[in-house]
Image (tube, rainbow, N blue to C red; front, top):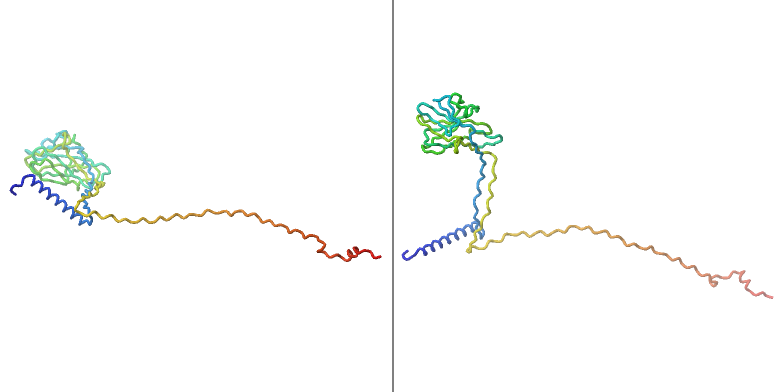
Length: 283
């Protein structure tokens, strides 16, 4: 609009933002049936613990040098060049008691990558990187994983969940289908980036605690309804046992003997002999 400066534009944007926030907040309150909208983050999924294992032995062999050992090299060579076929070998030890639910192999490349790279099982685990040669290398088994990387790929990843199923020693051979190129990979003897087997274990990890929802108050919304309260039940007095009362001692009633009747002559008639004695003598 002509004549509107930057401050005016900023004020209008801020006003629209405030209105939008209030509208969203009020809508959330209506949907929740309360005057306060609650904003909560979704709970994070529980992550299964992982066990990262470096190769206990790694080397490569060369068909053109049957008695040569390459276990001390900081790189593994795979592929074919001038009729010389190179194959890499890896060995991993999964600790006892590990509940394996998945496994993934990671290899770091050095330079360009050529051809399709495959991972095969190895028949035996008796080989060591110090003594492994093309002449004594163990026989190769079935292919368990493969990948066709781009020319400039810096990392190769293989799903070995079907091959690594529990504790034990696992040996693998790494090959390239390139007919006239060699791909180089970092070995465990290098300063970093050696072969790494990541094993997912079955011992679940507790999910992180979810923070409580944060209320957003808005002056345009009605106040939240008070939470219903349940009246407390009246307390029932505990029954009391009355203390036993001792009867007051009573003195035994004393009986007074009746006084004897007085011996009064008026109450006793004179006998005839007494009457004669009292008469005066006649004479």
